[in-house]
Length: 316
Image (tube, rainbow, N blue to C red; front, side, top):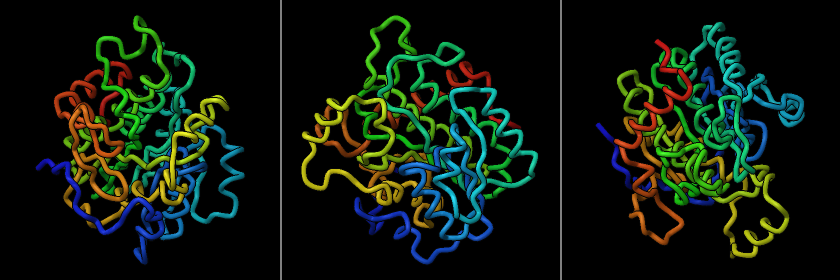
């Protein structure tokens, strides 16, 4: 049964931290994979899960940088992975599957934002390729390990940036239309939400549930492609306590990955440690999820295209 896209009044809020979400709950013997789990929101996600007893595998594009950030943390395993390179994804997943271990939580956290136009080796626009297609391939390849967990959860990091664009199925990779880095980012974040929706349909029979997450506005390395002028403009337009800390930003990811409040649910877009409200396309609110990011037909269309683009399907 499809979960309703409406708040469940979890009792948490926008200032809740990841460790507050967990409380005294233990995750001993659980195994998590957190992409980008060595910086910003990803690092705080790793810290919270490890503190609760989980083993966390952190696939990293820059292992030396990741090693420095994760020094001294118990039960953390560092791996090499570049989401923009299909061969790197396959190499990582083959190594993990060879270990025979299950994955109880897969947090597809890594991403890039508002980058200049670049393309991966297949010619695909980099934000859609990295943020969505890389994680699509990763999840599909790790499917046997997720099934082995008998109750796994997959968390897809989306963003309120999904408001900027639906999926342009006619020209998703900006081969004909002018490139706009924010439209491209928005499209990739819509893709993250639709991915969770379609994945949940496929996962529910195997007790695998999927969620998409807006972590909140947080100043992390995600802004590294923006100029100083752009950063100043963004900051000047923000008032009061607009920004969350990374600890607060990780809360919704950790809630979706672990909370018994979500047992039997899936496929929904979440924010501020609750299921988000479904809002109309013309909503002026910064909150809520727009129709194009929660449409089952669009989710299935994107899934089919993603299989075509990557040449990858859920592993048997």
